[in-house]
Image (cartoon, rainbow, N blue to C red; front, side, top):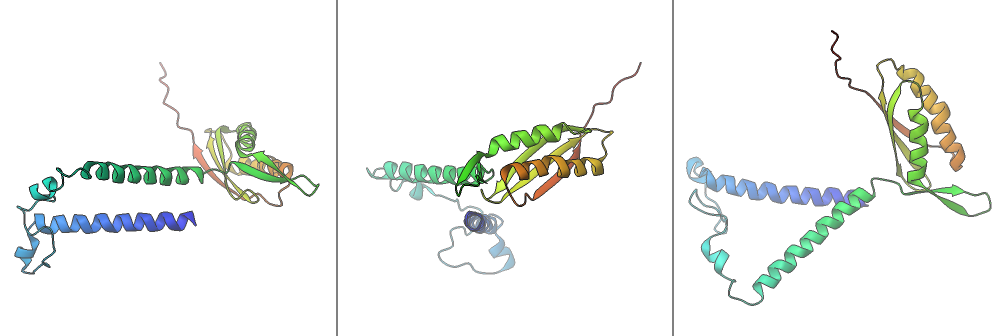
Length: 198
């Protein structure tokens, strides 16, 4: 649901900015006169001398008592909505809890960060892995592990992936009682500075 809302908002925002930019560009470059076409009467920018907001538009409401409180309230609402949107995007990025079947008909909540830390330590202990980062995403009952490994120059990627699957991921799946724990693994090399030899 939030992904659909996110795409719709980004699409509308992009469309609005594209329309505004096109209108300014059309007037600023005087394209309607050069290419010989007319713009509608309500079109705001008719030539290079036009401005986005003229003196009349800027000064029309300044003497009214309601003007500045309204401007501040609108900007505050926009700021709150943008911060909420950012918080939702960041919050959904990480799974905070995993539901573990405790075999007595109830489900216990396991801290997602704790499980990530354990998986990171186990993955980092593998031979050839310089650094590891694990993030759990998805639903609390069906998490997905995103694993990023930074490999040393002597590392054997095939062997590391096999050990990661057989040891780290299998242990995490069994300890949480999950039927499956899908994972996405990305491998990167550790960049070393060249050492000077005298």
